[in-house]
Image: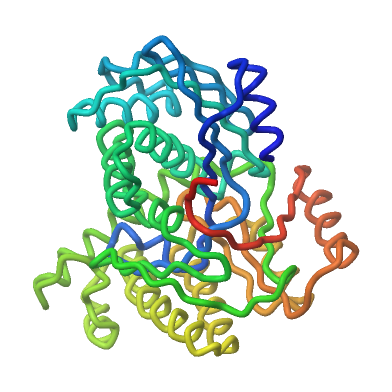
Length: 385
Protein backbone atom coordinates (compact mmCIF):
# COMPACT_ATOMS: atom_id res chain seq x y z
CA UNK A 1 0.00 0.00 0.00
CA UNK A 2 2.89 2.37 0.67
CA UNK A 3 4.11 1.95 -2.92
CA UNK A 4 0.57 2.48 -4.21
CA UNK A 5 0.33 5.69 -2.17
CA UNK A 6 3.64 7.01 -3.48
CA UNK A 7 2.64 6.21 -7.08
CA UNK A 8 -0.74 7.95 -6.72
CA UNK A 9 0.81 11.01 -5.13
CA UNK A 10 3.50 11.30 -7.81
CA UNK A 11 1.00 10.79 -10.65
CA UNK A 12 -1.33 13.43 -9.20
CA UNK A 13 1.07 16.07 -7.90
CA UNK A 14 4.36 15.28 -9.75
CA UNK A 15 6.24 14.82 -6.49
CA UNK A 16 6.62 12.25 -3.73
CA UNK A 17 4.87 12.83 -0.38
CA UNK A 18 7.05 14.46 2.25
CA UNK A 19 4.91 13.12 5.12
CA UNK A 20 3.02 9.79 5.29
CA UNK A 21 0.48 8.52 7.80
CA UNK A 22 -1.54 5.41 8.58
CA UNK A 23 -4.94 5.49 10.29
CA UNK A 24 -6.62 2.13 11.04
CA UNK A 25 -10.24 1.07 10.94
CA UNK A 26 -11.80 -0.73 13.87
CA UNK A 27 -13.93 -3.75 14.77
CA UNK A 28 -16.40 -3.53 17.66
CA UNK A 29 -16.43 -6.50 20.00
CA UNK A 30 -19.06 -5.42 22.53
CA UNK A 31 -21.02 -2.46 23.84
CA UNK A 32 -21.30 -0.26 20.77
CA UNK A 33 -25.12 -0.25 20.59
CA UNK A 34 -25.39 1.42 23.99
CA UNK A 35 -22.46 3.83 23.72
CA UNK A 36 -24.80 6.81 23.41
CA UNK A 37 -26.33 5.76 26.75
CA UNK A 38 -22.97 5.77 28.55
CA UNK A 39 -22.13 2.11 28.04
CA UNK A 40 -18.50 0.95 28.07
CA UNK A 41 -17.16 -0.42 24.77
CA UNK A 42 -14.56 -2.97 23.73
CA UNK A 43 -13.02 -2.66 20.25
CA UNK A 44 -9.96 -3.57 18.17
CA UNK A 45 -8.11 -1.42 15.65
CA UNK A 46 -7.43 -3.49 12.52
CA UNK A 47 -4.57 -3.55 10.03
CA UNK A 48 -6.83 -2.19 7.26
CA UNK A 49 -7.19 1.55 6.98
CA UNK A 50 -6.14 4.73 5.21
CA UNK A 51 -2.63 5.53 4.00
CA UNK A 52 -2.25 9.26 3.54
CA UNK A 53 0.55 11.20 1.83
CA UNK A 54 1.11 14.95 2.14
CA UNK A 55 3.34 17.43 0.32
CA UNK A 56 3.40 21.22 0.18
CA UNK A 57 2.27 23.22 -2.84
CA UNK A 58 2.76 26.81 -3.98
CA UNK A 59 -0.86 27.97 -4.09
CA UNK A 60 -2.79 28.32 -0.83
CA UNK A 61 -5.28 25.55 -1.46
CA UNK A 62 -5.81 21.97 -0.38
CA UNK A 63 -5.91 19.48 -3.25
CA UNK A 64 -7.13 16.05 -2.22
CA UNK A 65 -7.21 12.84 -4.26
CA UNK A 66 -8.68 9.76 -2.57
CA UNK A 67 -8.81 6.29 -4.13
CA UNK A 68 -10.67 3.21 -2.89
CA UNK A 69 -14.07 2.75 -1.28
CA UNK A 70 -14.55 6.54 -0.87
CA UNK A 71 -12.97 7.63 -4.16
CA UNK A 72 -13.18 11.35 -4.95
CA UNK A 73 -11.06 14.38 -5.81
CA UNK A 74 -11.70 17.88 -4.52
CA UNK A 75 -10.04 21.25 -4.11
CA UNK A 76 -10.52 23.37 -0.98
CA UNK A 77 -9.65 26.99 -0.20
CA UNK A 78 -7.35 26.76 2.80
CA UNK A 79 -7.94 30.01 4.65
CA UNK A 80 -11.64 30.51 4.00
CA UNK A 81 -14.53 28.92 5.92
CA UNK A 82 -17.46 27.46 3.99
CA UNK A 83 -20.94 26.42 5.05
CA UNK A 84 -22.05 22.89 5.76
CA UNK A 85 -23.14 20.96 2.65
CA UNK A 86 -25.29 17.94 3.63
CA UNK A 87 -25.03 16.43 0.14
CA UNK A 88 -21.23 16.15 0.21
CA UNK A 89 -20.45 13.97 3.22
CA UNK A 90 -16.70 13.41 2.89
CA UNK A 91 -15.95 16.80 1.39
CA UNK A 92 -18.00 18.24 4.24
CA UNK A 93 -15.85 16.37 6.78
CA UNK A 94 -12.69 17.89 5.31
CA UNK A 95 -14.24 21.35 5.17
CA UNK A 96 -15.38 20.92 8.76
CA UNK A 97 -11.80 20.21 9.82
CA UNK A 98 -10.56 23.30 7.94
CA UNK A 99 -13.31 25.46 9.44
CA UNK A 100 -12.43 24.31 12.95
CA UNK A 101 -8.73 25.02 12.44
CA UNK A 102 -9.55 28.53 11.20
CA UNK A 103 -11.91 29.05 14.13
CA UNK A 104 -9.05 28.10 16.46
CA UNK A 105 -6.87 30.77 14.83
CA UNK A 106 -4.66 28.55 12.62
CA UNK A 107 -3.86 29.57 9.05
CA UNK A 108 -1.83 27.98 6.26
CA UNK A 109 1.17 29.68 4.64
CA UNK A 110 1.57 27.03 1.92
CA UNK A 111 -0.66 24.92 -0.23
CA UNK A 112 -1.26 21.28 0.70
CA UNK A 113 -1.49 18.27 -1.61
CA UNK A 114 -2.95 15.12 -0.06
CA UNK A 115 -3.38 11.67 -1.57
CA UNK A 116 -5.19 8.82 0.18
CA UNK A 117 -5.37 5.10 -0.60
CA UNK A 118 -7.06 2.38 1.40
CA UNK A 119 -7.12 -1.39 1.74
CA UNK A 120 -10.56 -1.46 3.35
CA UNK A 121 -12.48 -4.35 1.74
CA UNK A 122 -15.62 -2.26 1.27
CA UNK A 123 -17.33 1.00 2.25
CA UNK A 124 -19.13 -0.30 5.34
CA UNK A 125 -18.57 -1.70 8.80
CA UNK A 126 -15.04 -0.72 9.87
CA UNK A 127 -15.45 2.96 10.93
CA UNK A 128 -14.24 4.18 7.54
CA UNK A 129 -15.77 7.66 7.89
CA UNK A 130 -14.30 8.41 11.35
CA UNK A 131 -10.96 6.97 10.15
CA UNK A 132 -11.02 9.16 7.03
CA UNK A 133 -11.79 12.31 9.01
CA UNK A 134 -9.18 11.48 11.63
CA UNK A 135 -6.57 10.88 8.90
CA UNK A 136 -7.21 14.34 7.42
CA UNK A 137 -7.17 15.93 10.88
CA UNK A 138 -3.94 14.10 11.75
CA UNK A 139 -2.20 15.32 8.58
CA UNK A 140 -3.46 18.92 8.74
CA UNK A 141 -2.53 19.17 12.39
CA UNK A 142 0.98 18.02 11.49
CA UNK A 143 1.12 20.46 8.57
CA UNK A 144 0.23 23.31 10.95
CA UNK A 145 3.13 22.11 13.11
CA UNK A 146 0.83 22.11 16.13
CA UNK A 147 2.24 18.93 17.63
CA UNK A 148 0.21 15.74 17.46
CA UNK A 149 -1.70 15.06 20.68
CA UNK A 150 -4.14 12.17 20.33
CA UNK A 151 -6.28 13.39 23.21
CA UNK A 152 -6.59 16.81 21.59
CA UNK A 153 -7.24 15.38 18.13
CA UNK A 154 -9.91 12.94 19.28
CA UNK A 155 -11.93 15.68 20.94
CA UNK A 156 -11.30 18.06 18.04
CA UNK A 157 -12.43 15.55 15.43
CA UNK A 158 -15.46 14.50 17.46
CA UNK A 159 -16.49 18.17 17.53
CA UNK A 160 -16.19 18.26 13.73
CA UNK A 161 -18.63 15.34 13.48
CA UNK A 162 -21.13 16.98 15.79
CA UNK A 163 -20.95 20.46 14.27
CA UNK A 164 -20.64 19.61 10.58
CA UNK A 165 -22.46 16.30 10.26
CA UNK A 166 -25.04 16.56 13.02
CA UNK A 167 -24.36 12.87 13.62
CA UNK A 168 -24.53 10.75 16.74
CA UNK A 169 -21.27 10.69 18.65
CA UNK A 170 -18.51 8.51 17.26
CA UNK A 171 -16.15 9.20 20.13
CA UNK A 172 -15.41 5.54 20.90
CA UNK A 173 -14.59 4.97 17.21
CA UNK A 174 -12.17 7.89 17.21
CA UNK A 175 -10.55 6.83 20.47
CA UNK A 176 -10.04 3.27 19.21
CA UNK A 177 -8.53 4.62 15.97
CA UNK A 178 -6.22 6.94 17.91
CA UNK A 179 -5.10 5.01 20.98
CA UNK A 180 -5.00 1.35 19.98
CA UNK A 181 -2.03 -0.95 20.16
CA UNK A 182 -1.47 -4.18 18.22
CA UNK A 183 -2.63 -7.32 20.05
CA UNK A 184 -4.65 -5.23 22.48
CA UNK A 185 -8.35 -4.51 22.76
CA UNK A 186 -9.36 -0.90 23.45
CA UNK A 187 -11.64 -0.60 26.48
CA UNK A 188 -13.35 2.80 26.73
CA UNK A 189 -15.33 3.77 29.81
CA UNK A 190 -18.59 5.33 28.71
CA UNK A 191 -18.88 7.70 31.67
CA UNK A 192 -15.33 9.08 31.89
CA UNK A 193 -14.02 8.28 28.36
CA UNK A 194 -10.89 6.83 29.97
CA UNK A 195 -9.02 4.34 27.77
CA UNK A 196 -7.43 1.05 28.78
CA UNK A 197 -5.45 -1.17 26.42
CA UNK A 198 -6.14 -4.81 27.24
CA UNK A 199 -3.73 -7.46 25.88
CA UNK A 200 -5.31 -10.58 24.41
CA UNK A 201 -4.03 -13.95 23.28
CA UNK A 202 -5.97 -14.64 20.07
CA UNK A 203 -3.84 -16.46 17.54
CA UNK A 204 -3.48 -15.43 13.90
CA UNK A 205 -6.37 -16.59 11.71
CA UNK A 206 -8.68 -17.12 14.69
CA UNK A 207 -10.66 -13.87 14.47
CA UNK A 208 -12.74 -13.17 11.35
CA UNK A 209 -15.26 -10.64 10.09
CA UNK A 210 -18.04 -11.78 7.74
CA UNK A 211 -19.85 -9.05 5.79
CA UNK A 212 -22.21 -8.96 2.78
CA UNK A 213 -21.70 -6.55 -0.09
CA UNK A 214 -25.18 -5.09 0.49
CA UNK A 215 -26.27 -3.72 3.85
CA UNK A 216 -29.51 -2.99 5.63
CA UNK A 217 -29.71 0.78 5.63
CA UNK A 218 -33.37 0.60 6.67
CA UNK A 219 -32.13 -0.37 10.13
CA UNK A 220 -31.01 3.18 10.94
CA UNK A 221 -34.49 4.50 11.75
CA UNK A 222 -35.22 1.42 13.86
CA UNK A 223 -31.96 1.98 15.72
CA UNK A 224 -32.85 5.61 16.42
CA UNK A 225 -36.24 4.47 17.73
CA UNK A 226 -34.46 2.06 20.08
CA UNK A 227 -32.40 4.95 21.45
CA UNK A 228 -35.54 7.02 22.01
CA UNK A 229 -37.02 4.10 23.93
CA UNK A 230 -33.84 3.90 26.03
CA UNK A 231 -34.07 7.61 26.86
CA UNK A 232 -37.73 7.21 27.87
CA UNK A 233 -36.73 4.35 30.16
CA UNK A 234 -33.97 6.53 31.62
CA UNK A 235 -36.48 9.24 32.54
CA UNK A 236 -38.69 6.66 34.23
CA UNK A 237 -35.86 5.14 36.30
CA UNK A 238 -34.60 8.62 37.20
CA UNK A 239 -37.69 8.91 39.43
CA UNK A 240 -36.54 5.81 41.33
CA UNK A 241 -32.86 6.68 41.57
CA UNK A 242 -31.31 9.85 40.05
CA UNK A 243 -29.35 8.81 36.93
CA UNK A 244 -28.08 10.48 33.76
CA UNK A 245 -27.88 7.29 31.68
CA UNK A 246 -29.28 3.77 31.86
CA UNK A 247 -25.80 2.39 32.50
CA UNK A 248 -25.84 4.06 35.92
CA UNK A 249 -28.87 1.99 36.95
CA UNK A 250 -27.79 -1.24 38.74
CA UNK A 251 -29.07 -4.42 37.14
CA UNK A 252 -30.36 -5.79 40.48
CA UNK A 253 -32.59 -2.71 40.81
CA UNK A 254 -33.68 -3.11 37.20
CA UNK A 255 -34.92 -6.64 37.93
CA UNK A 256 -36.98 -5.26 40.81
CA UNK A 257 -38.52 -2.34 38.92
CA UNK A 258 -38.64 -3.40 35.26
CA UNK A 259 -42.32 -4.34 35.51
CA UNK A 260 -43.05 -0.63 35.96
CA UNK A 261 -41.95 -0.11 32.34
CA UNK A 262 -45.22 -0.89 30.61
CA UNK A 263 -43.88 -0.29 27.11
CA UNK A 264 -42.38 -3.62 25.95
CA UNK A 265 -39.80 -2.02 23.66
CA UNK A 266 -38.58 0.34 26.40
CA UNK A 267 -38.28 -2.60 28.82
CA UNK A 268 -36.33 -4.84 26.43
CA UNK A 269 -33.98 -2.09 25.22
CA UNK A 270 -33.27 -1.00 28.80
CA UNK A 271 -32.52 -4.58 29.81
CA UNK A 272 -30.04 -5.00 26.96
CA UNK A 273 -28.21 -1.75 27.72
CA UNK A 274 -28.00 -2.23 31.50
CA UNK A 275 -26.79 -5.82 31.27
CA UNK A 276 -24.52 -5.12 28.28
CA UNK A 277 -22.70 -2.46 30.29
CA UNK A 278 -21.96 -5.07 32.96
CA UNK A 279 -20.98 -7.70 30.37
CA UNK A 280 -18.45 -5.40 28.72
CA UNK A 281 -16.71 -4.73 32.04
CA UNK A 282 -16.65 -8.46 32.80
CA UNK A 283 -15.33 -9.28 29.31
CA UNK A 284 -12.54 -6.73 29.80
CA UNK A 285 -11.61 -8.32 33.13
CA UNK A 286 -11.63 -11.78 31.50
CA UNK A 287 -9.20 -10.60 28.81
CA UNK A 288 -6.95 -9.05 31.42
CA UNK A 289 -6.90 -12.35 33.32
CA UNK A 290 -6.30 -14.27 30.08
CA UNK A 291 -9.52 -16.16 30.79
CA UNK A 292 -10.70 -16.85 27.27
CA UNK A 293 -13.56 -19.10 28.40
CA UNK A 294 -15.33 -16.32 30.25
CA UNK A 295 -14.63 -13.78 27.51
CA UNK A 296 -16.30 -16.17 25.04
CA UNK A 297 -19.26 -16.60 27.40
CA UNK A 298 -19.81 -12.83 27.63
CA UNK A 299 -19.55 -12.42 23.84
CA UNK A 300 -22.19 -15.10 23.29
CA UNK A 301 -24.44 -13.61 25.98
CA UNK A 302 -24.10 -10.26 24.23
CA UNK A 303 -25.13 -11.76 20.89
CA UNK A 304 -28.18 -13.42 22.41
CA UNK A 305 -29.25 -10.20 24.13
CA UNK A 306 -28.61 -8.13 21.01
CA UNK A 307 -30.75 -10.46 18.92
CA UNK A 308 -33.64 -10.99 21.35
CA UNK A 309 -33.81 -7.71 23.28
CA UNK A 310 -32.36 -5.02 21.04
CA UNK A 311 -33.90 -6.72 17.99
CA UNK A 312 -31.80 -5.31 15.19
CA UNK A 313 -30.56 -8.52 13.63
CA UNK A 314 -31.46 -9.90 10.20
CA UNK A 315 -31.99 -13.43 8.90
CA UNK A 316 -28.88 -13.42 6.73
CA UNK A 317 -26.59 -12.31 9.56
CA UNK A 318 -28.23 -14.81 11.92
CA UNK A 319 -27.35 -17.51 9.36
CA UNK A 320 -23.68 -16.55 9.63
CA UNK A 321 -23.80 -16.65 13.44
CA UNK A 322 -25.57 -20.03 13.51
CA UNK A 323 -23.38 -21.64 10.85
CA UNK A 324 -20.11 -20.54 12.45
CA UNK A 325 -21.21 -21.69 15.90
CA UNK A 326 -22.01 -25.15 14.53
CA UNK A 327 -18.58 -25.26 12.90
CA UNK A 328 -16.31 -24.84 15.93
CA UNK A 329 -16.62 -21.11 16.45
CA UNK A 330 -16.09 -20.15 20.07
CA UNK A 331 -18.23 -17.03 19.79
CA UNK A 332 -19.94 -15.17 16.99
CA UNK A 333 -21.58 -11.77 17.35
CA UNK A 334 -23.26 -9.23 15.08
CA UNK A 335 -21.18 -6.05 15.23
CA UNK A 336 -21.66 -2.31 14.67
CA UNK A 337 -24.55 -0.31 15.82
CA UNK A 338 -26.83 1.04 13.12
CA UNK A 339 -27.08 -1.01 9.94
CA UNK A 340 -25.44 -4.15 11.38
CA UNK A 341 -23.10 -4.84 8.54
CA UNK A 342 -20.89 -7.65 9.79
CA UNK A 343 -20.41 -10.60 12.11
CA UNK A 344 -17.25 -10.97 14.21
CA UNK A 345 -16.32 -14.57 14.94
CA UNK A 346 -13.61 -16.16 17.06
CA UNK A 347 -12.74 -19.71 16.00
CA UNK A 348 -11.16 -22.41 18.12
CA UNK A 349 -8.42 -23.00 15.55
CA UNK A 350 -7.05 -21.02 12.60
CA UNK A 351 -9.37 -21.53 9.64
CA UNK A 352 -8.51 -22.65 6.15
CA UNK A 353 -10.38 -21.32 3.11
CA UNK A 354 -11.96 -24.73 2.51
CA UNK A 355 -13.46 -24.70 6.00
CA UNK A 356 -15.37 -21.49 5.23
CA UNK A 357 -16.45 -22.37 1.71
CA UNK A 358 -19.68 -24.14 2.70
CA UNK A 359 -20.93 -21.08 4.58
CA UNK A 360 -20.22 -18.81 1.63
CA UNK A 361 -22.01 -21.15 -0.79
CA UNK A 362 -25.07 -21.50 1.45
CA UNK A 363 -25.26 -17.76 2.11
CA UNK A 364 -24.91 -16.70 -1.53
CA UNK A 365 -27.41 -19.31 -2.68
CA UNK A 366 -30.06 -18.16 -0.20
CA UNK A 367 -29.56 -14.39 -0.35
CA UNK A 368 -28.20 -13.81 -3.87
CA UNK A 369 -25.42 -11.51 -2.71
CA UNK A 370 -21.74 -11.96 -2.10
CA UNK A 371 -20.39 -12.75 1.36
CA UNK A 372 -16.91 -11.45 2.12
CA UNK A 373 -14.58 -12.84 4.78
CA UNK A 374 -11.79 -10.85 6.40
CA UNK A 375 -9.06 -12.38 8.54
CA UNK A 376 -8.67 -9.77 11.29
CA UNK A 377 -5.22 -8.71 12.43
CA UNK A 378 -4.91 -5.97 15.04
CA UNK A 379 -2.91 -2.79 14.54
CA UNK A 380 -1.44 0.22 16.28
CA UNK A 381 -3.50 3.39 16.29
CA UNK A 382 -2.99 6.38 14.00
CA UNK A 383 0.66 7.13 13.42
CA UNK A 384 3.18 8.76 11.14
CA UNK A 385 5.56 6.43 9.32
